[in-house]
Every structure is written in structure tokens, then in C-alpha cells.
Image (cartoon, rainbow, N blue to C red; front, top):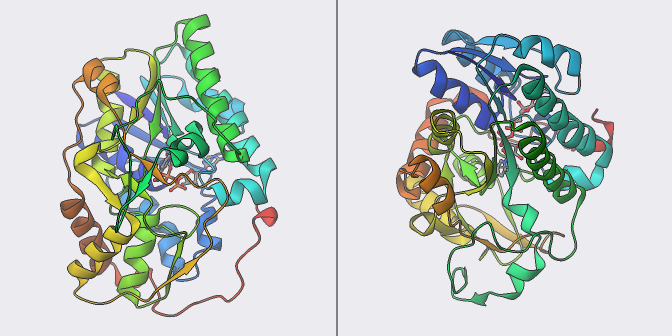
Length: 357
Ligand SMILES: NC(=O)c1ccc[n+]([C@@H]2O[C@H](COP(=O)([O-])OP(=O)(O)OC[C@H]3O[C@@H](n4cnc5c(N)ncnc54)[C@H](O)[C@@H]3O)[C@@H](O)[C@H]2O)c1
């Protein structure tokens, strides 16, 4: 079996590559190595930039430094493959509003190219959307506020929840466009394609920052003793999903390729608020974090707990790792890799994303 993973050197892509490599598959990590977060997370040493790539090379994964916006290259490299897993993206809401062109070209045009490659070679494909496609307003208006978290009744949210509710950002638009194109390619070309509407994912090999990857951002900052900012009350709640479980969903779809758009998250057993997550991190590290609060960010969804029954029924997939276990694994990895992070701010100037292409 041969699998091409776009964004293979990113966080989720790394885990998807590892998942298939561990099963003996030939794996290509197709990634332009843009790593936008490295220009904006001031505590990362240069070695962090190459970390996932070098680990994949050591496992025998072929690295292709190419761009998903280059359709010709993508069609060439997917020739002879059995499956495409598409994790390459501009994933941050903040970057999408600072640089909508980058967001559109990467997420909308890039995903279109991936679907085209799958259509031309008649390959199964799984792509990534986000729970943000539901939009913030309707879900935020349905919440009550408890001491450490927002709550909602019913607890879980399935695929029938209305989409794009309230004010949206370019990321909402590009991620929703991915879902619409996927549906069109399933209906028109009978492509065996899945779109995962992902909740917050976390785990080892995540170089999280304030833009994207909040669990790792909190854990890295707490470990280094750097200040940590909460935007809003900190009661925002997610059903966080461990990266290995998310990677297994790509495997489950390949085994049972029932096309569709699926909500994918950890469900009620994995609920945790930002404040509760910081408590958990402090407990594991046995040290206090320096936490401050700022205004809630535009477009922020205060709550999401996934009803993943549709995907579980289609494939038998289930999330296995609970937050206590997964956050410990993440922190264990951080403690094993001190060379990747600096205990001081290395750059004072955050690179403006409009300079990124
Ligand atoms: N991590 C999460 O919590 C989360 C939550 C919801 C949805 N998602 C979605 O999951 C997917 C993976 O997210 P992630 O956290 O692994 O992101 P990431 O930023 O860690 O990885 C993305 C990878 O894509 C690569 N890339 C970017 N532009 C590219 C291009 N034009 N051509 C080729 N490669 C390119 C980057 O170099 C990077 O290695 C994204 O679609 C994201 O929107 C992630």
C-alpha cells in the first residue's frame, strides 16, 4: 500500500504518516515546509523546524518538499498511490484574517487540487475541515456558565447542527468550501472521499502557539515558565482528540470508505475547558503557570463536544485516549526534547503574516 500525506511534516500529518508507516505502508509526506507557526512562536529554536521531518525520514518516509498549490506536482506524486490523506493547510483563524489570500490559496485552491488528483487517479481521499464551520453565534448563545467551563444541553453536537451561524472569518469560508467541494466530488464523480470536521487535536510533535494548537501552547509555556494568555474567560470547552486517535480515523476510512462529512472529536469523555486543561498541566508538571487574560477573539467558538456516532457507525472508529493520559504523553515528549524550545523569548517581533506566502 502507498499513501501520500499532504502536510505530512505538520502535526496531524506527522501522526498520519507514522500510523501508515507503522502498518508497513510506503508513505510520502508531501509538504512545502512552510511552517508558518515558527515565524510566530517566539520560544522555538531552529532545530524544531526540522524535527518532524527528520523523525519521518528516520522511519523511512519519503519527504517531498512541494506545494499543494502546484497541481501538476500533486497529480504526478499521487500517481501510483492507493490513498491520499490531506492534512496540509493554513489552519489558524488569526492568520486567515491577517492574510486571506494565503488562506484561500492554501485551503480552497490547495484542497481543490487534492480532490482533482484523487478524481484523476480514482483514489480514496480524506480531507480536514474544522468544527469552526458551524460558526460561533448559535452554539455560543446556547450555553450556560459554570465555575470552570461553559455547559450545554444536549451536550453533543452532530452533523445536523446549522452551519456558518453568525459572524465568520476567512478560515470559516475556506474550510466550508472544502466541505462543499468534497460533497460535489462525491456526488458528481462518486469519489470515495471523507471530510473530517475536527475538534481540537493535541499530542506529541505539536509545536502549538497562540494561533493554533492551544493544548501544546499551554504545555510548552507552562514548562518553560513563560507567560500564558487566555483570550476570554478560559471557560471555553472542547472534547480534545489525541493525535493518534485522529490518525486512526484516516485508517478507519480507508478500511471502510463510506463517503461523507463527519464530525470527529473525543466526545463527552474528553471534555475539558481551557482553565481545566491548565490545571491538569500544572498538576503533571508540579509547577504553577503564569496566566493572564485578554479579550475574547473574534469568531471564537466557546464550546464544542462532538457527536461522532455517524463516523463510528460507518467505520467502528472510537477515540481511545483520555485527556489525562494524552496530556501526560504530550508533556513527556516535551520533557524529552529540551533542545527544541528556549526558556526565553528568542525574538521580540512577531512576523506579520501578510509577509508569508
Ligand atoms: N490541530 C488542531 O487542533 C486542528 C483542529 C481542527 C482542524 N484541524 C485541521 O487539521 C489539519 C492539520 O492541522 P495541523 O494542526 O496538523 O496543522 P500544521 O500547521 O501543524 O500542519 C500543516 C502542514 O501543512 C504544511 N503546508 C502548509 N501550506 C502548505 C502548502 N501550500 N503545500 C504543502 N504543504 C503545506 C505545513 O508546512 C505544515 O507542515 C488542517 O486542515 C487543520 O485545519 C486541526
